[in-house]
Length: 487
Ligand code: TXE
Image 1 (cartoon, protein in one colour):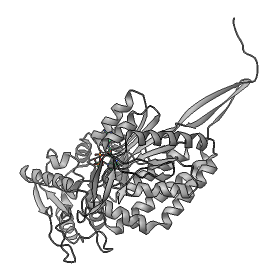
Image 2 (image 1 turned 180 degrees about the vertical axis):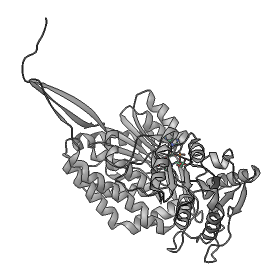
Image 3 (image 1 turned 90 degrees about the horizontal axis):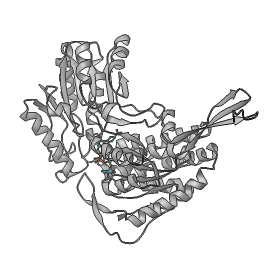
């Protein structure tokens, strides 16, 4: 099959000038051909999005909200189909796609569909006058996605954008072209005007063309820090708004009074869920020295029981990483950890059989890895690996671990496990991170803002906080008397 553009309410047809093969990470079978959008197609998407914006911006919030809510309903009705597409595109277990990806997309559409009618300005009673503010839409917004949560990322960007009256052109990652097209179809079926949510396929070149296009008012990226810096630079010469949801190397701190079973569960979720391909993962696991041995024993035992294999099997708990190239990148990090003197306690190798004895050598599989004897200065403790590699570190005091946890250019997320309520809040308040958890990890309800400090990004997704990133505020002063003038 061909993954083409979705412009003005329909999939485009015709042969592509440039295309590449999309592979299934679990077996590297060919899923289809991804068609790189041409400049003409991007112009058509812009023209269509402008037309839709002119209609959409005059809708009331309630009218916009109804379309978002209907879109969410359609996604939920198609949960199995879309989840299956996501699993074959990303390589993640079907249990995850069914439980998280599609539902999280629908949650965002429902949340912003629900608040669309409540987006409002303020009124100010002044001396013989009054003032008011108007949160106004920006125009055509570009969304650019990463490959780990394709439909969630597309919906987390489209939902607030459309709720605020904008139109959106979305470019999925070149590795996962499929489910953004399902979202586009759902919007049309829900009654959105053609062109309100267009999809263009392509690699960074198409992303750069959108970023630099003068009719694009804002760019929202989910991707790596390096790409975020390129987009920020590209937007700078037009002073274009950006939201950047980037990478991280987040700390997960386990104090000696923590519930060990819960802390181990969180450490595993923070490193092995979605094969570790989650930006907010707690990949530096700091364990207070007194409980280190008992924590590590349970972590190793439970990690070695993870059911790695065919992602389409409902019993599978861990699938394949996105591509051969990414698998090799993760393995290079594992080799660097060993060279630096860390101990590879378990995992980190390519299995031939999965947990049901099936041959999985054709896929990009890697057993979940745990490194001990780590030092903060090691590359595996400083750089984002974006794979199933957990680095465990020990600490003694609260002051020490806060200092070490903050010693990074990243600042996306952080977690603390303790039963001392004062210590939990005291420590989390000192951690330089935008998205934090106490006694859990990576739980992202749409009501809470999601985003990072420092080089992990700019702006926030989800929650009412996202509204400010998709509107511009107009002040209006209304005179009820005369103009007092000295002239
Ligand atoms: O990112 P890439 P990937 C991060 C995660 C990791 C990375 C993995 O931490 O670092 O994303 O995803 C497009 N101008 N997050 O490899 O390579 C590219 O085509 C415009 C953080 O996909 O940065 C793709 O669509 N666009 C996140 C997108 O950028 C460009 C959660 C991302 O590609 C471009 C998930 C350019 N010059 C992953 N170059 C979070 N914080 O929420 C590339 N692209």
